[in-house]
Structure formats: C-alpha cells, structure tokens
Image (cartoon, rainbow, N blue to C red):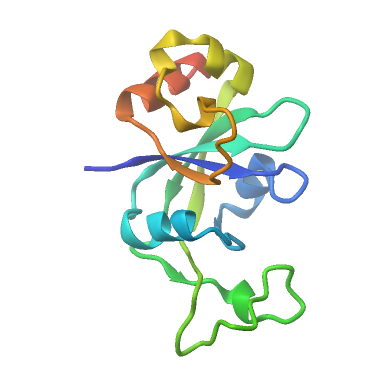
Length: 155
C-alpha cells in the first residue's frame, strides 16, 4: 500500500519543470535528520508525492511525482567538497545522509497554493498548514492527498 508525501523544493534551486525535463532525480541535499529518517525508513518505491514549491512568491503544490527507488541510497553530495551539501564528518563507510530517487508523474491543471490549502477545512491537520513547519519532507494522509489532487484539477 503506497504512502503519500509532500516534498518541498525552492523553484530557483530545483523546480517541478526541472523534474519534468530530467524525468527523475536523486532527492539530494536534505540536511535534516527527521526528513532523512523518513526517506531512509518509510519511503518506498511507488509512494506518491505532492511536489511543492517553497520560498517563492506563491508557494504551493505544482503536481505529482513518485518515489522511484526501492530504498534510500547514500547522498553523493555529502562526499563532494565542491557541493553546498558537503559534510566533512560523513564517510563512504559511514554516510550520514541518504536520498531517494523521485520521478516526474504529472502536472496539476492549476497549482494549489498554500493560501488555498489553508482556506480548505478538509485539509485541517496537514503539516504544511502549521505555522513554522519547515520540514522539507512531510507525510500526507490519503484523504488530504486526494483533496489536493482534486483542487489541482486531476479528478
């Protein structure tokens, strides 16, 4: 049974259109232990993802992606001294950071803004609605996932 997630990315760093162009990518650069643990311990191939643009003029969900890897793998950016995500305390023998592969699925007919998410009573309880909630990977209940998809014009 698939799980449902909301994954945030700043569009000037990596946008939903960039994922479409690439087809799939490693969701690297995550440097939060709680988000890392979700990728490592809970995400599975086939899980559904709401792709969310954050830190922009109009944050919100742009479309759907899916987890494409069977399990998390060591994040290669932690070993690269030229990367913004380099971690000198991480070693290949004992990596600190992991990532999953995420694949493009489909766009929404219209994006679902954070303002619309906050206005919808049926989405009460979504982590993204909570003030100060900055976690870049968040679990989403199936009912909330379905409602966001409907708001985005998918069904």
